[in-house]
Amino acid sequence: MTKARSVGWVGLGKLGLPMAARLASSGRTVTGYDRDHGRIALASERGVTPAPAAEAAAASDIVFTSLPDDKALRAALLGEKGLLVAMRFGAVLAETSTVSPEASAEVAEACEVRGVAYLRLPISGSSVLAESGMVTCFASGPRAAFDSLVPVLQGFTRAQTYLGDGEEARYAKLAINLMISVSAGMMAECLSLARKGNIAWSDILNAIGDSAAASPLVKYKLGPLAARDFSPAFTCRQLIKDLDLILDAAGRQNVPVPLAAVMRQTYAAMMAEGEAENDFFAVVRHMERLSGLSDPG
Image (cartoon, rainbow, N blue to C red; front, top):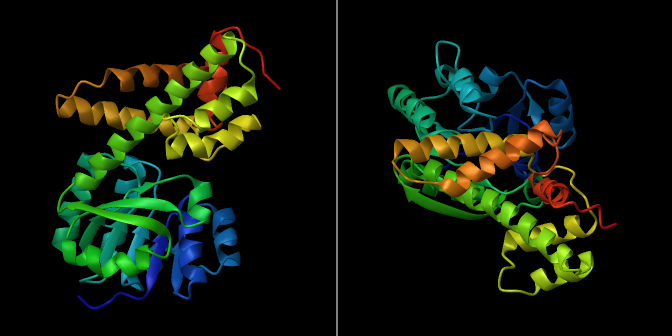
């Protein structure tokens, strides 16, 4: 496969924009589109050339898409007005969203008909990590297409894991997000129990950071928790969408996921409390309320 050089990026949201901007800053030509004109303006300031979605797709050897859900994925890519109609024969579609394996398989079928190499490329990490190029990606699809894209992927990810030629990357992303949601809930219960035991807020955070339980996610969240900063890197609303995908995928595969079900109900309660657009680690504050604890600040 000829090494791809021109890049189109459709979907310049919290993750899409910083990833596209990192590629542009490395000297690659990146043409981008988003339905939100404000996001297009921000992307333009960071070196991404604005263009209509179909034009970006037609002009590019690689088309990245970063979309919010299954509905947006189908609307953007499939049908007579979908981007696949505009893409070149032999181009690569690298789809970075968190979507269901079923919707992804529909895209795979359409790509095969159009002669487009389809890489499922979900991203793991927050908008903060995307800004610094520290997100990771899981990939599945044609191995040759993945190998040809690695130099491009290294421009905005710190690690790239190839998993197979089908929907494996979709399942990997859902599995990892299941761990992330449960980890947040675990942290919330841990902190409330410690505070009830009369441990100071800063002391328990320091203890956790030095403990065997200090995963990269936990360490990453210690700073914001110390500052009681729940501004969103990944919102409660986004996580509840992913939990719905996890529960559906697990149900289809006959895998019991009781912890996912508990976390789905927990985040549903948080949505009702007005936490939808706050960071998903606001579950700490939710557990404090349930425990009768006030803000430790």
